Length: 128
Image 1 (cartoon, rainbow, N blue to C red):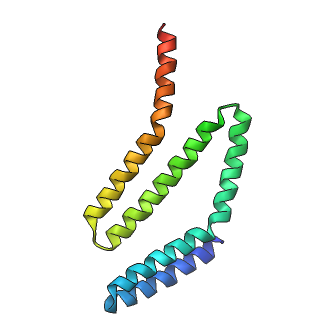
Image 2: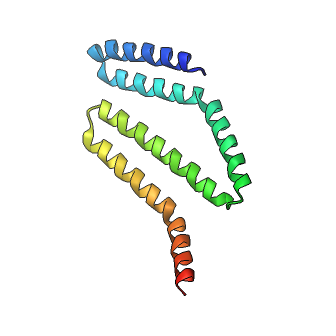
């Protein structure tokens, strides 16, 4: 999907949400979520290109492929967390949005634990 198509789709969806919000707020929220999901699905080929290019660069660097996997997962967690937070805030649910942010931070911390352990082990080896 081109940026022009994505922008046009988003603008039309936003206008429809604005009109629908006047009469049926719950349906407007569902429409906003639907438009968001469709936009993201339309961008999947571009995301695949990014991942393939980054994977190629990463494999040429000689680093462990596990690091690239962690990086991809971290970016995915950040994007999903932001999307969930924004949708919750659009619904007027600030407390739930904050909880989603906290969940994202916890998931990122858990994901990064093996990297922290590797760095700690390396530092300990250097200090010996």
